[in-house]
Length: 236
Image (cartoon, rainbow, N blue to C red; front, side, top):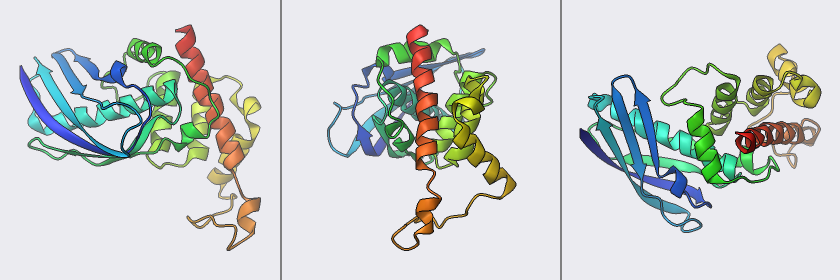
């Protein structure tokens, strides 16, 4: 057994008791890799440090592969916390330690914050998430995995209009009927017919920005996706 130690500095928010995601177990044919994080109390400073431990139980990891488990842990933790309590965890995660560098992550929780979804038990979310047996899977093979991966892409800055429409398709057979605006917008983007906005999107500088505001359609789609995931948690 080998153990690797890191420290993650998180500039962001932790507004939930993260006890249920203090450890993730990644199972493979060769053995198990555990990642443990010592979370602080929720609602503290907007910047905090957490120790991270990667424990190799029989896998015989190459040291170059260890950082991937640290990154994977934070992606998993981000999803679980925000499904349980939307807008409860996110920010910039910079990790140091180990022989090889862990890439800095930016995980934006705003798509959850503006989804107007309710809350479910983090304990239930963690049990449900484990039941999916995604482990180290990098290619989605089920509709649920596709929806979760699309949410991660949105959190990392990908186009929410396209990703959320695809997430809805992964969860619902009648997705276009449930959120017609997001699908009309996605199709317009794909065809090159959607307005191309400056990154500022400031309507005080150009009033036409307000006419091209897609916020309501995006928020509705996000609410449907996150609400459905919470429903799956409750139904297990």
